[in-house]
Image 1 (cartoon, rainbow, N blue to C red):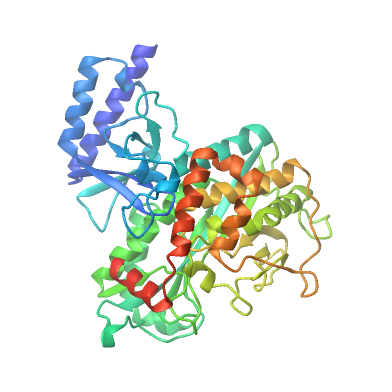
Image 2 (tube, one colour):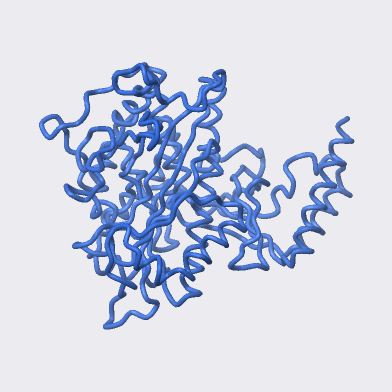
Length: 467
């Protein structure tokens, strides 16, 4: 039976590679996202992959028994959590070095041919010890998978996530020496949709080619700003992959149309910033209900477990900002009147609180909870893992949801990345989820970035040149 299974695995690998070759693909890009949201990847020529598969099969008939296309390449361990976003310069206090390498094990469900680079297919990977094949504690995609597995197997809950991705379009030529947005419109204005229809259509088509479903596209409050709403999903890892792929696709399409897409949280002190709002709910796998977050018999309209989930997030929110608002620029975006929330609390359909319970437009029932203190500079896998783990802890401990926020009861949230990192150092639960290796490296590198503060103008120019 084992040999039969091995033969099937070998056949599926060969079929995948031949299909890619028939589609004109020349390179297979193995990708990971490091702890600080840099996509790191290596492109393996397709013929080399096919030769590697054939040689492994000849040497050992059981070599193909694992995941298809396993471990064709590796990346230095330090690249996963020891290098800051601005340069490949090791942060010594991360306790990482260039001595070890991690092999990349691809997730076949994530395989996509890239419409903006049609001779390349990309596959998202987890990182593993090259000797033991164990999942690396530095792998954030693996961490999210572990959190989801514990929720499913330990609590019987299927966690559901949605994402709203905001960005601004700038002309590719920086007129007068500084980037200029393509328009100066306001929220839900038709001008951006009309003038950028070719770009929007290209983004929609290319995301569709990658099977990334879109629910909504509209203009946001900032100059040249758009929001792309990804469809709500019961597969959080897949949703995270979609966020990564959508960002890459939007950037590539913008360049094709003479623009640059900036996901920088704040590009101007006088206009709205760019967020990545996240929505959460869950389903009891033993129940016939599609949504176990809501309960119309409760005063809040939220189930008791839903209330505890929210309280778990609120309990850890000051520390969680280290992951959801992970840069100095991130904290420029938040404040009173910014529709992000700047004080600790929750409410229903109030855009001025950080944790907002959303209602169904038809039934008016509570459907999910939104966290607005998130942006696209975060590693989406790490961010989701930490937020969901905090919510799950709230359920496990039966946390009682505090009253809705008012100006009188709200507590201030951290005002800087360093302040949030200081709180994270004393958050034993979140540190236990991270583990000692990742927590040490993450805090060290983020602190080094927090000290390297730049002016807003410098941050914008850096983001513009990298876009």
